[in-house]
Image 1: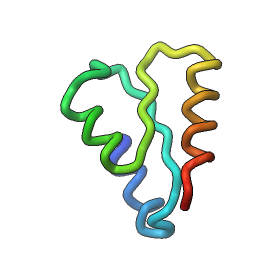
Image 2: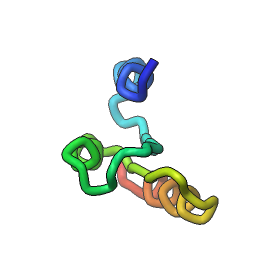
Image 3: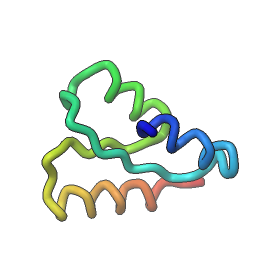
Length: 64
């Protein structure tokens, strides 16, 4: 399954679920902007542990 297919059931169970995605796509692509618009955080690959932890911190800090 791709990321969207994996995320869909979680969104169905809990529309407020916080999501951090990781992708090898260009950080400025249309897909990535759409990801941000859907309330998801995108971490481009390759990433460091610090980058992933910052994304997780941002996702967890969002109001539900």
